[in-house]
Every structure is written in structure tokens, then in C-alpha cells.
Amino acid sequence: MASRIEDYALIGNRMTGALVSRSGSIDWFSAPRFDSRACFTALLGTPQNGFWKLYPTDEVKRIERRYRPGTLVLETQFTTAGGKAVLIDCMALNAGRTDILRTVVGLEGRVSWRSDMRPRFEYGSATPSIERLDDGRYAATAGADRVLFAASSGTCEKNAALISSCNVAAGEQETFSLTWADSWHKPPSSPAVREATERASEQWGRWSGRYKTKGPYGEAVLRSLITLQALANPETGGIVAAPTTSLPEEIGGERNWDYRYCWLRDATFTLYALMQAGFDDEARSWRAWLLRAIGGAPDEMQILYGVNGERRITENEATWLSGYEGSKPVHLGNAASGQRQLDVYGEVLDVLYQAERNNLQAGAEAWDVEVALANHVAKIWNEPDDGIWEVRGGRRQFTQSKVMTWVALDRAIRSVEDFGNEGPVDHWRKVRDEIHSEVCDKGFNGKVGAFVQYFGGDTLDASLLLMPQVGFLPACDDRVQGTVAAIEKRLMSDGLVWRYDSQTSVDGLKGGEGSFLPCSFWLADVYVLQGRRDEARALFEHLLELRNDVGLLSEEYDLHGNRQVGNFPQAFSHVALINTALNLDSDRKPAVSRSSR
Image 1 (cartoon, rainbow, N blue to C red):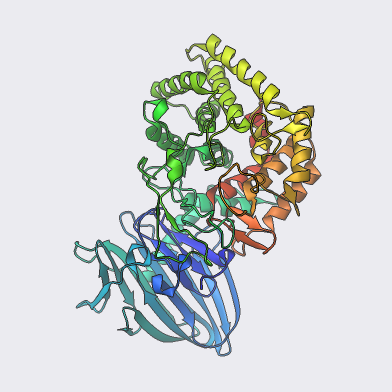
Image 2 (spheres, rainbow, N blue to C red):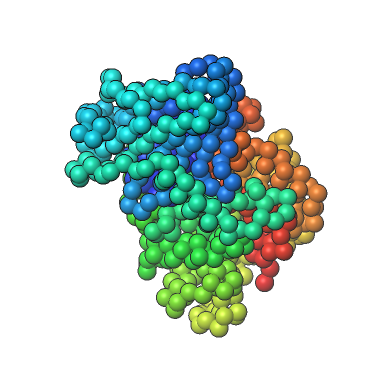
């Protein structure tokens, strides 16, 4: 059985990643990219679907773990009846290679270890053939995939598994490596594990050293920045939402989605997190990816893309997998790529405006894209859509979608006013004002005393916490304050916020979900804008307590089970954490900057 979600830690090379449990088991690993076929899939099924566990065979009395400061190198210390040893896990940061590096180091006494490596390709459905190579390594092959296994200790094959055993005393080391390769190529050499591990540690340290830790939340921000960097492709600049698929929003439920893709919705929050933390080059790469993905026809713009900008993201079910703790179906691909979500136009035009506002100038072609997008929004803003939450219960006139079409035109207008660009600004102003009037008229429910999820409805939606942050209305506006109060009363429990009432028919799905962590951060941001700093800080620090022992967050939190749920680690949660920390303890407050003219 897979571990609890928060019991995992991420290692990666920025092209892909693996999840390592507290017990030393790698239960999820896809190669060579995040969205590639997995060869360890026990996380979403059973041990028969593939894993690699490296663990003490003696009785374990205590487990402690941490990332080396400023890195993605994981150290898990095991204390047994016979001694103490540390397991060091990471992936090499070598372009064009995919190597998992594992080292066991003795600290005290003597500890016996066992490595059990069982690759199962094609998401756990294909058992490989295994052969011993002339150099003593083992190759496991099925179809297009191959992994090369090397160990400094003796290894034997048993039932399509590779078993190694060793003993380490204080000062002794044993090393293990796994290298993915295309099956038709000559097997690549295996890495020198200790040297490659230290090199990866140095590379991560150099990158993270660019962030100058400040304030009480500096360490939390840095860990989130490292997590975001781990999910950012170094070649294309695309940032995947998470390295996993189908970790459930409700244990045993059907809300299980593939998040190994890049969402336009995350654009402005991500840009601000990178810019305000001082990572301008990464912000430029993200914007460049965005422009390439969009292309030249605004009516063809999708809400999500592959990490290289791919558009065809067909959704299928992995019927042979039992799901994380029985949560089915397991999805491969995401049908939301074909949805209409009007809010993404606002996100894209806002991110392009904010980038230029913060001196990340783009070429003339970027403005051509902005003009085309703004003109398109002016034509289609009043059409129904699937909404920010990608509901599958039918299109509606979602209030937040309309707010973001207002943002789209507002930022296009500001680009003319602030930067001297040229465009049909009078027409844009006319449509922008029309949208604002309609949202205030149809999106606000006087009986509820709040803006509601869709025109004419009476249900709430936590995405409306973004209204003051994007500058649609000031945080002190009575209607905004009423909306915040209603969300606090009806969408909040134990200090955490739900996206919306999942028991309504709006999303077309059964069951419920956990509290949505980014929405909880957004509430803290609104508190900052409203001058409620003590409440903002208290909520933020409560959210920090939900991180796991190595500082990682999933998408949601299950208050009943006191556990993280949803795909993990979630880029959007960490982006929200960064921005809220900056809103609380920085001169460069993203919420204030984004909402102001």
C-alpha cells in the first residue's frame, strides 16, 4: 500500500521527478519527462505496478529526514537497534540524462540494508525482461523503455526484480543508481554516484543562493522556490502543475486528474512569485513559453499545454490500476485541455502587462498577440464557459470568468496608456465598462450579500477572493467585504477555504473534495489588502503548519483525515505561499502591486 501523500518527498532533474517515501520507497517515477510513461507506479496501484525500496532490514526505531539546505538532495536518517545510517536520494542534473542516485552512509554502529528494485513499465502494466550486462550492471527492458541498474554491493535477479543487500558501519558507503534510456540505443554508462550527488547539491546551492533569505518566512519561501524550479523545464520554460497524476482530491473519490501539464491560469501568480523573489531570468523563460504556446490565433488558445507547448492531451483511464487508496479512475492526460475558460485571457494579458511593468520588456510580436487576444475577448466575453475550476457539469455565466475578461481588456488599455502601445483603446474601454457593469449587476446577489459563483445563482465561489487582487473593486468596497464575510461563514472550516460547495450540481461530479490550499492563501492576501494583518499572518502560519516535514504541499487538505490530498507537490500551492509571504513581509507586495494602477 502506498504511503500517505505527505509522507513523500520529491527528487528531480527538472525534466522529471520521483516521489520517495519516508520508508525509502520510490513509488512514482516517470521518464524521461514528467508526462512520460511511469516505470514505478505503486503509488497508484500495488507493489506489482513497480517500485524501488532501499531500506534497513533491522527494526527501525526512528526516521528523520530533510533536504540539504537550498537543494533538492534528500537525506533520510534511519536509527535502528544496531546503529544509525543515512539514505541520500537525488537525481543528477545532467542535460540529456535521467539518473536516480542513491547512497547509504553509515553513521553509528552497523546497519543492514536491502534494495528491492521492481520496474514495471507503461504505468505498471508491462513486466520487463532483465539481463546482466558484461560490466556487471543489469538492464530491464520492455517496449521502448529501459533502465540500467548499478550497485556497489552484490545483486541478484528474482521474479523480474533486482535484489541487493549490504551492511554499512560508521564511515562506510554503498551506492546505487538507476538510469533510464531508450531501449534501442546502446546502454549508456552509469554515473559515479557520489560525485554526481555532490555536483547536484552544488548546482542547486548555486541557484538557490541567488535568493537572499529575509524575514521570518524566508526558509519557507526558498523551499517553495526550489520546488517551483524543480517543476520548470530548463529547455522550454514550461512549468508543470505537479509531477503526478490522479492523486485524489477525496480519498476513494473520482476527482482524480492528471496535472503533469502547464496551465495558463497560473501565469500571473507564477510570474509575480519569480519576479518579486529576484528570479527575472526564470520569469522571462516562463513568459517566452507562454507566448510560444499561445501561437497566433486567439480563438485556438487552450487552458493547458504540454511542457513543450503540445496541444493534443487526450484523456484516458488506466483501468489496470486500482488507484491511490482505491481512488478511481486513474487518468492519463487531461480532457480539460479542450474546455473553454474565459478567465485565461485575463491571466495571459495580465502576465504580459505585469512583465513589461516590471521591466521584463518583450518584442513587438508580444504586443501583436495582446491586441489579438483583447479584440477576441471583446467579442466573446458574454458567452458561457466552463469556469476557473474546469467543471464538467455544463457551461454557465461564471462571475469570475467575467471578472477576468474585464482584466484582459483593462490590461490591454493600460498597456496603451502606460507604454505607448497602439490599439483600439476606445472600443476596449467601452466593452470593459460594460463588463464591469454587468458583473456588478448580475454577479452580486443582494439576498446573499455577496458576489456569487454565476449570474443569477446564490452559491459562493472562493475564486471571487481575487476580485480586489486584480483591481476589479477595492478591498474596502462593501460588496467585496460582504463576499469575504460570506466565504468566511459558508466556505471556511478550521481556518481553511473550500473552492465552492461541491454538493451542488455545478461541477457534474460525485462526492466532495478537500479544502483548496491556494484559496486559503488568497484569503490571507485579501486580509492584507483590507488591513487585517494579524488575521492574515495567523492564517498564513496555520497554512505553513500543513506542509510536510520537508516543506511540501499538495493541492488540497482533508480536514477530516488531517492529511494532504490532491496531486503533489502542487506548484500552485507553492506559488500562492510565496506570494502571501511576500505580501506579509516584503516591500514588494504582489497583491498591492497587481491591484494598483
